[in-house]
Image (cartoon, rainbow, N blue to C red; front, top):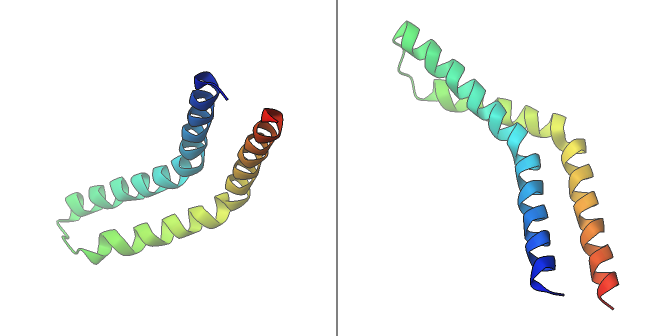
Length: 88
């Protein structure tokens, strides 16, 4: 395997990481912004008000996005295995 092949695998790996982690991180970001807006409007500065809804939303996002995430991981794994087979 040459340098170009290694760089291509690394690029694919970073892309898979972004595609898999992006929706869950965006859900956490959006709920965090909504809670921060709510806290600013109501002057409630309770710390658990930030963490509990964010944990719940991230867990729900993980459960909902799990088939999508597994599909992309399996596709990436298959492409890596195909490249390993092609080396021989």
